[in-house]
Length: 392
Ligand SMILES: Cc1ncc(COP(=O)(O)O)c(C=O)c1O
Image 1 (cartoon, rainbow, N blue to C red):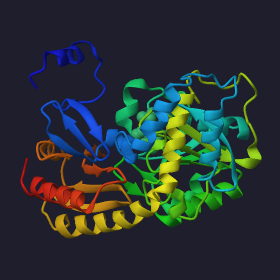
Image 2 (cartoon, rainbow, N blue to C red):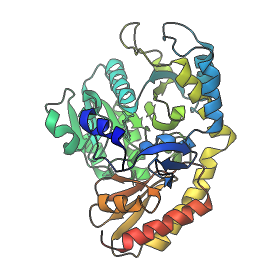
Image 3 (spheres, protein in one colour):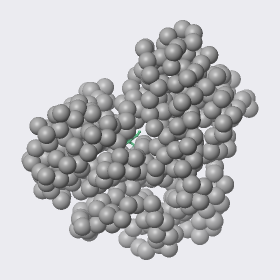
């Protein structure tokens, strides 16, 4: 990439991901630019973080205004910016939910959900699903149903049983009274963009209720408008006891939120849980502006309409290609499942000006920002068609 500075990343920065040879220097809404001023349509969006666009003007202004006031205030104290965010956030939370736990990432919000479930239920075991992804810290990793992420760190601290995702007929047998909770993504993201079948979530809700087992929906990837409703579970008409959110909720700044039903109250005694950075006014200002954007721009409505159209176009244009198995997903959480590994295709799309990511090994995942246009959809479809038509 002709930039000597970047060698510091190679030499000293611990590697988490296989790195792409692209130095991204700037972003605006659905586009990013590299150091050679090449423009890319961003459907990677930092694994979904930039769903409201890069540097969305409303969010940037809110951050700038807050910078002139104060950046950090512990949850030990009140802060009006935080209170304003909570007031806005409660507008998008269904009425049965009444407490919000603030964190700094998706994995932390899952950790918090698991702790809450253990505290409320006084039980310790969990049921999770194969192919699920819930995070990298040891608790959230315990409920992640993919050996690849867990193998190097066994044994896991939490006792977890795994079941096949969408196996409606097994729900009655698997959800036993000794479970603290069942945790499930309404749409599996990292596992390959796999929507739950409505009857699967309905069966989970019915049996968990009957057996006094808590139901957790992990909405870190599927939530906040991504699937054409504010929460993916609203597409199914099924409500959990606890749900999580993260990724785009603070417009690009780190956040994680756990939401629980009103009747559970505060759950933790002072000192039982905490977080140094959580609820800091800078992130809260960005998150408040993000909720306002979601509501003012009717993000879920736009995503619902355009997502259906995008999916139809992808099915029409790519569905019959030899390399393609199926197009799947919901709203702006879309996947093109291939007959072989997806990484070479994702790499090939980069010089064509389209950034995407891999999910479940064989799926090209599209997580576009809500503001993409019909021209962007045409450009992406054309690039995908070219890339998927040839062997990489
Ligand atoms: C469903 C789900 N849960 C949890 C996480 C972990 O979030 P984070 O990477 O912010 O810790 C992710 C991340 O992709 C996710 O998709």
